[in-house]
Image 1: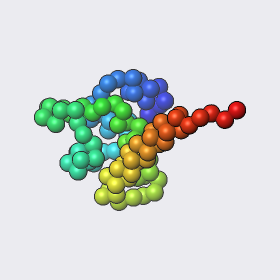
Image 2: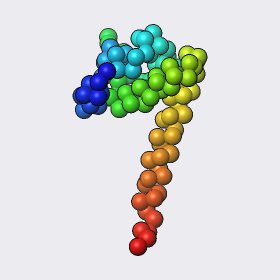
Image 3: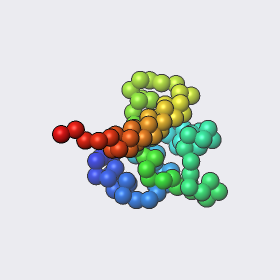
Length: 105
């Protein structure tokens, strides 16, 4: 998937499971497993075709890359995604706290 494809997907509010499968490189069955484990949440779990918030794509793509590069077991991917989400949250909090510090001349 090209940079332009990722930019287009990020500009949208949601992506389908087909688009998520193509963009992440993860098989649909693994994406379904991630939904069942709570690591990936569809916007409407009762819909005929699941759609996901487009902002999950970056985290999922990074997790998929680590999964492949480190040759992880499939059962490790939910934990990797959980850690990545927590890191993102902590980085956001850190930036907010740093913004409150007085600037040094």
